[in-house]
Image (spheres, rainbow, N blue to C red):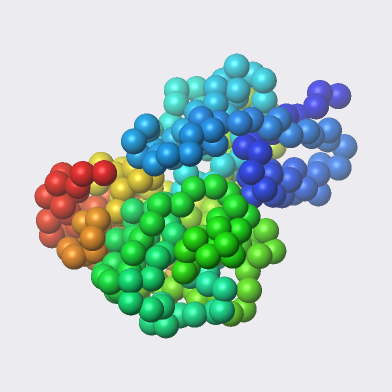
Length: 305
């Protein structure tokens, strides 16, 4: 029997996600042989500012090349890190049920955002998080931080930062979430498109693997992520843009909240629309057009990363 190979990054969170997919597949198909192929990507090697050399797409480039070269059968990604233009010959065959999509303020003593002292340093490499944080607390000093979750937490413990902003999903998956951490409401901090969702990428011509992983898909999460990603794509944004989007299904309807901001959080545009859950991309396009009519285009065009 052929061994099925899963391409993945080597970070603890990426490995957790890939092992999770492996376990789900084995639960339904205990006869399978599945192994992980760990890949060090350009994004893992580069420790500077990602936007200066191509953004978060650098975390998937070598993984997709491995998949196209048939050195792996499928790849596991965080949907928020995937570029919006998919390489020819590859497709997302399954999006799993979403974990908490929100963001968390991590401090050593369980402080809320209002408790942080004037000018406190907050570690985040996300322009989306920085813009929304500054919209609420313009006095705070947002500083660039790179590395996996463990590395970032160690920098906090070493007093390099007063606080960090991390994805709630990553903290929960790694067992690092603490009750005293402050979870942002979506009114203050709207998530990135696809945040908290895991996607499985396959070669378009590999029907067997596509059929194998399609059973892991969550229809509600899939609709939500499609709407969010379409909104960002129509806006001309990418993983490194100050754009946020979160969609939530309710019955046969899907509600999408969208946000565009300048880098300082001085100009923040928000809109919300609802539509048919079976047409998520139409909803994403509608929210994007609404934001554009409110001035999102001029904001995004003047941003100097």
